[in-house]
Image 1: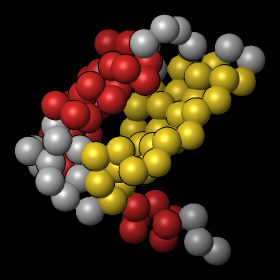
Image 2 (image 1 turned 135 degrees about the vertical axis):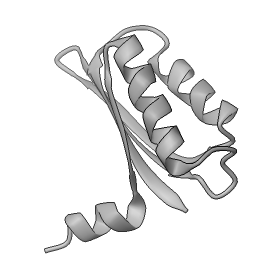
Image 3 (image 1 turned 90 degrees about the horizontal axis):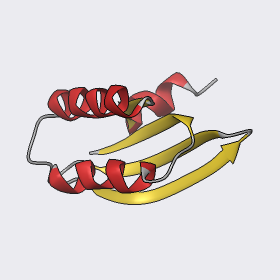
Length: 89
């Protein structure tokens, strides 16, 4: 299953490294990644494949939210089909 992740917060060293390490630990593959810094605010959107994940989607979502809180960031993940349906007009 594919999912869309967003990471938003104050820029600092190591954001991509820490987020990607958590995904690797969960056996989640990064398919595409886009990041930018807008007025010192880090923003990243990631397309991931969770098919081979070693945890449930809900557990992954909770782990990402907890990592975000630890890092002072907002980290969210949504199933791609739900994300696409919500943004289709």
